[in-house]
Image 1 (cartoon, rainbow, N blue to C red):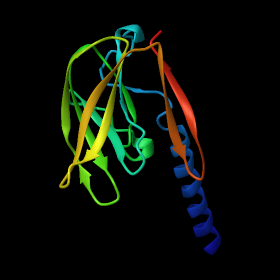
Image 2 (cartoon, rainbow, N blue to C red):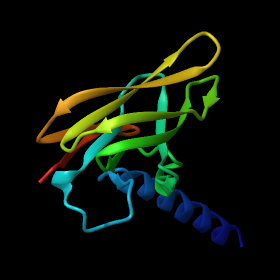
Image 3 (cartoon, rainbow, N blue to C red):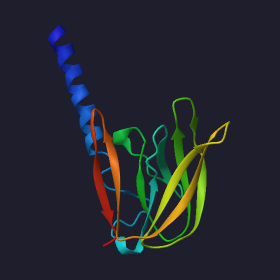
Length: 154
C-alpha cells in the first residue's frame, strides 16, 4: 500500500514536470481559423520581467488559457484589427485580471505587454515593437536555464 502511494506521487510529479516542459513552445491562436496564414497575424507577448508573472487568458473572449502551465500563456497569435486582450498579472503580493484594447493591430508586428505596479494595483500596457520576421521568448525551466523558443510569420 505504501509503495502504491509513493508510486502515485512520483507519477504525478513527473506529469506536472512534463507539462511545464511542453507548455508555451508555440503561441496559442487567438482566433478560430487554424488555417489562417501566419503572415497575416501578429503576436502579443508578455514581457520577460523579473518579479512579475503575466498570462494572456483571452483574445476577444476566445479562451487562450494554457492548461499545461497554470494559465501563464506567454504569447498568443492574433489577427489584424482591434483586439481586446484579457490578462492575469501577479507578483509576490497581488493578482490582477485587467484587460486592454489594442487598436489597429498590424500583420507581422509584435505587441509586448509590460507589467507595472502603480502603488495599489498591477497594471499592463502594450508597446508595438514593429514589424518583425520572428520573435523569441525564453521559457523558465526551474532549476535549469530558460529555453528559447521562436515564432515566425512565414
